[in-house]
Amino acid sequence: MDSSKSILPADYAPWLVSLKSRIASAQQRATLAVNQELVQLYHYLGSEILERQSRQGWGAKVIDRLASDLREAFPTMKGFSSRNLKYMKFFAQQCPSGVIGQQPAAQLPWFHLVTLLTKVSDGTQREWYAGQIISQGWSRNTLDMHIKNSLHLRQAAAVTNFQSRLPNPHAQLAVEALKDPYLFDFLGLGDEAHERDIENALIRHITRFLLELGAGFAFVGRQFRLEVGGDEFFIDLLFYHTRIKCYVVVELKGVDFKPEHAGQLNFYLSAVDAQIKTPDDKPTIGLLLCKKQNRLVAEYALSGINKPIGVAEYQLVRSLPEPLDTSMPTIEEIEAELAGDTLSNDGNKRAAP
Image 1: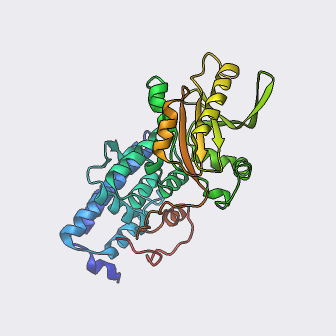
Image 2 (image 1 turned 90 degrees about the horizontal axis):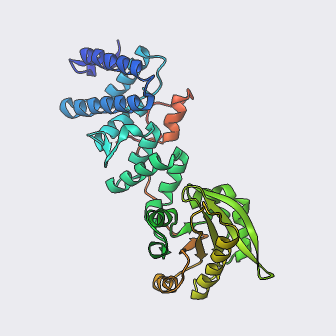
């Protein structure tokens, strides 16, 4: 005799029938809006589980039985493992109305959503990341990296003079394109590294560097040559921002910020605007990356500069605290289950809430 039957609530059987009906209906509509329907279905299942656990007091073994019954009823549908049902319950618990701030949760892919719920506890931060996922088209791995690196604290944090040197909305787009600090811990360099060492390492890791710079940056060249009045000058790194439609000159400094750095970058911007920029391009902007900056000194220095410049620090060794891990099973474990890998379903890897 199946021992799990003795722990089932009296109305379990008709409730299971209603769930099957709901799932079957969702299957039929999923061809038009697969993800939206899936997330809404998961929210419904999670809400049902949460409500019945609260009202009837049954435990995890009922979830195990439910997972088994749903997989038997819908053998072609993946996602009905006990682990994923616990994520559905957590989803309903954290987002009872099915929204994250002003963003409908169903706009997000399921595992993006799970990443947000399990790795970001603050509602305002969750809403910010949800908006970035939708507007920037982040993959889940990119989202995970940005959460780990506390992007919400760094985005649009650079010292700039953009508001007084650029027209809106160009100015605001430029502000949002920069961050402070930039994290270069992926280079494997220590704080003693020189400018050229950092530049060389950034080129070797250009894909990771572009990811840290953010969406829209396209690499043009390093040590980009300019000739002015017969003299040669070389820009450390030149980019083009495809969303702002402008060139971006990046200068690396292996020392703390000094006001004369802004003057040098101002000269480079003038030369790029005169020699490279086309009439269709927006004004070139500059990004000065230094080991450390005094924000007030940087603000004063930029106030006397006529070109749009941002100043930010870079970190070769991580100093930002990593978010605390959760007690939920890992997303990788759930993805492996959905892919058909053989993982234990006894919950021993991590205990669900």
